[in-house]
Amino acid sequence: MGNPKLEEGFSDFLEQMVRDGVLSPRFIESYIGENSGFGQGLISSMKEGNFSGMLKNMSTMLPTFSEQASRGYALTVGYKYFNSLAKAGLLSRDQVYSAAKKFTENTMFQFAASDRARILQGPVGGAWGLFKNWTMHYAGWQMQYLGAALKHGAWRPYMLSLIHISE
Image 1: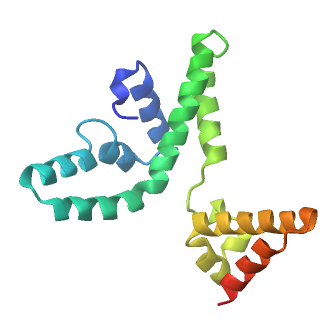
Image 2: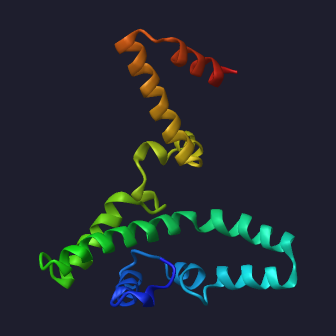
């Protein structure tokens, strides 16, 4: 997403997505383009030779905005794909916008309670949901191990993974 002004119409597309609440306004000013706060902070830290400050900025800023960056990436992928269909004459500009918006909303989620599954809204689910990426991958791996055990009789990986979580 480096510089949205390099592709005609993309900058307007991003601004419309911010107006509609698909992207956070802070995301664009913090991360996109040469004047982004993140880019400027890294450049100034490097010029000053302040590598510990640079590492500190990177270690705190990246996790804070990783979800917005994921949404921005999904939005960009949707835009690129549907815009290529528009260039081929298959979609209109409005259809590119609505398709990219729907693609982003279907592949990414916000953190409002209404956007989370009900099981993740209680106290236990909330604690489990703090590390969504790890827990979802872990549950997926458990299902793969269980599937291999049931299909092929390979119980060892599944049993070892159960022993690990009981420690």
